[in-house]
Structure formats: C-alpha cells, structure tokens
Amino acid sequence: MKTAIALLCLLAAAPAAAQDCTLPVANPRADGWVMEQSPDDGWSASHEVLSLTVLLTVDAPVTPLALDWYVPPELGSRVGLLRYFSGEPGTYELTVLERTAVIDLESGLILAAPISSANCVPTVWTWYEDRLEVDDGHGGVVVELPAG
Image (spheres, rainbow, N blue to C red):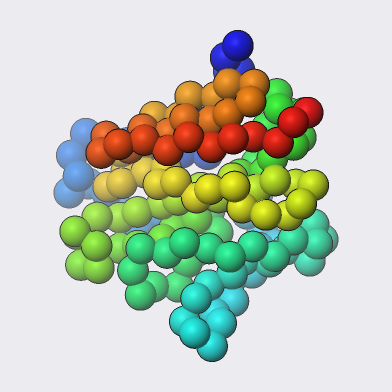
C-alpha cells in the first residue's frame, strides 16, 4: 500500500535549466543541527534537543549544511528526514548535490542517505508502508523502513 507523503516541503524547487541552480539555502526547520568534522575528514550531524548524532555521506570536500528536518506523520513518526547539502559545482561532475538522510528515530541510525536533488532537479521518491524507493535516474535505492 502506497503512502502519500508531500516531499515538496523537503525538496528544492527545480528550475528548468541546470545553469539556474544555485547553492541551497537552509529552511528554519533545520535549526539546531550542527555539522562536525571528525579527524578522518568524515562528517556527522548532531542535534542536542533530539539527542541524535548521525554520520553523513558527502559527495565532495565541502562542509555539509543542514537544509531541512521533517518527521513524516504519515509514517507514525518512525523516521526523520534530514536534507543536507553534500556537494557543489566543480567537486562532483559540476553538480549541486543534496542528500536526505532517512533516520530511524528509535535507533538513531541512518537507514540510507540517497541523493534527493542534483542540479536542483529532485529525484523521485515513492513511499510504501514498509519501504521507500528512490530513483535518481541512474538506478534506484530501496530503503526498508522500521516496523510501525
């Protein structure tokens, strides 16, 4: 059974031409997320109020930026979605990249961090009761969701 979730609040508007794509701006819902670099040059995001710290996937040698935080009520608040900037022009195929970390709120673990936008063109996310399927145009990612 499909679950309809409005991810428009998470995904940046997609301009017609890639050259119109600008670096993303954070939504106030992302306030409270702090990006921290580890000694091995990896990145994590932490939120003191939520008591969460998660490891991030980045696509370039950039400082990631938290862009949005959303807990889809349609999924019984089982997962949280942290959208973040993960790459910029000149570092990965001249593409502005955003990822969305799908976080299991009970365990605090990232289930996946698929690309949610490349050059301001959103990927296709299809939600089901037990899984999420993401198609970025180059293949797909299937994310098993926690039972609810």
